[in-house]
Amino acid sequence: MNPFRFLLEKSWQQQTVSGIPEGGEFTTSPYKVALLFFLAVVTVMFGLFITAYFVRMELDDWRPMPESPLLWLNTALLFLSSITLQWTQNVLKKEHFKKLKIGLVLGALLTVGFVYGQVTVWGQMQGEGYFLYNNPANAFFYVLTGIHAIHVLGGLFVWTKTIIKYWSGAELEDLKLSTELCALYWHFLLLVWLVLFALISYT
Image (cartoon, rainbow, N blue to C red; front, side, top):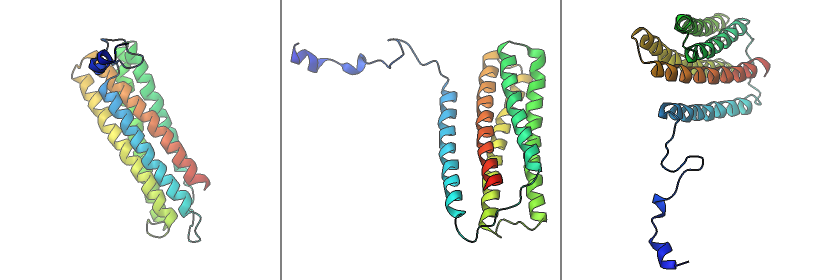
């Protein structure tokens, strides 16, 4: 092998990404890549909060809050909303547009019900004297559930934009992408909530 030829080669023009043929291109939407990156950041954030939760609960001033039965109903609502968004995505793939409207509206209503249920739980806890500043356990409860609810509201905003796209006659591929991203986000929110719910209920 000629060493001079090797040194003169423009290797960066010959390299290809594994799994992608030369001259090919990525098929994954940049919006999906951005969402996955965002979910990774949120996962790290909640992981840090959960770690702090376990560390803090070992101290003597920790007084666990009572479990509200309404949290079970809220969990069911979020679970149903996640299923609804997955169903809506499947309906859109099969181009069953008559059923699409049902999934779009039902998913939004279930999500609103979850957020309203969380606000109701906060009101119940405060009515019973469990305020944020009374105890570290109280503070963690409001912070964790509050941050999660904010992320749910953010997803609901995007889902509402998807509904507007549908009524505005958006392109099919645009609707498919929006619905897929929302379904992925809702599955993530459900998983995070199940972890938080178990943490709050059993520690």
